[in-house]
Image 1 (cartoon, rainbow, N blue to C red):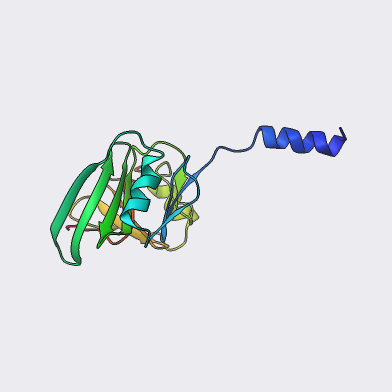
Image 2 (cartoon, one colour):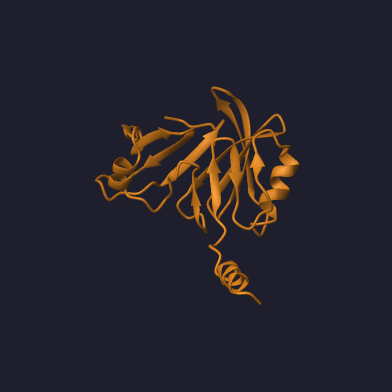
Length: 164
């Protein structure tokens, strides 16, 4: 084996762990094949998440949303998929989500508010009924705790029924 082949083999043996993406156009779950994009059928979305999360999700329907009727599939591992008219239209995730997840812009549940403000131009928090909220690169989120060391508690994208 050549020296460069040894280096390549060593690099591949210590490749970084798979990461998940909380995207403005869908979601990529750690351990799932490929990505789940908005517009997928409800059955496709349930099969996609079901391949990663054991057990059946809790199902619910919301009819008092200003942008229509939604159904949800919630897994206790911290992810909710939202459906409208049989299509996957949104997701939300909270800090109990296991694995390495971030948005395409690099936001994640581990970064402090201070770090987010310093490292990302335009990152701002606005007061909300529950904590403070932000919108950044097509993803929305909420921070419940005060101060610069607080971290993101929840993120979402797409169509969701958020009451404020």
